Length: 139
Image (cartoon, rainbow, N blue to C red; front, top):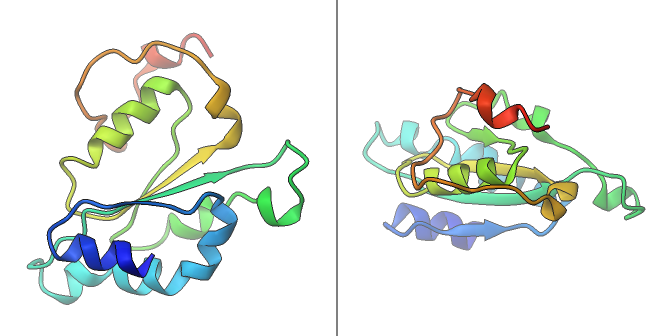
């Protein structure tokens, strides 16, 4: 997590894979006290274009340390964007958001979505804070 944060503030656009969201607790300081706040601490002069990929959720018999969902912990962290896709199209659109953002994105994706199939049209990043009803009709 620290290497990804350092890469982001020096101009790269890293994508840090935590493999399981459960490991986010070992990176709390870098995420909450550093990545989320660096742009504010430097008066907007520093950018942190970082994606933290954290697959979460239970239902696979993966034991207590690999079945948690931590989205609510991070929703109240200023400077941190939290996204939770629910379709393959959402996944693509939210990943593409990484190409235009200057803030860290914590990308929680339920592990059951990995097996979902669906259309992924378009090349435009999804806007944050807006759902498109037509994308949700098939669910």
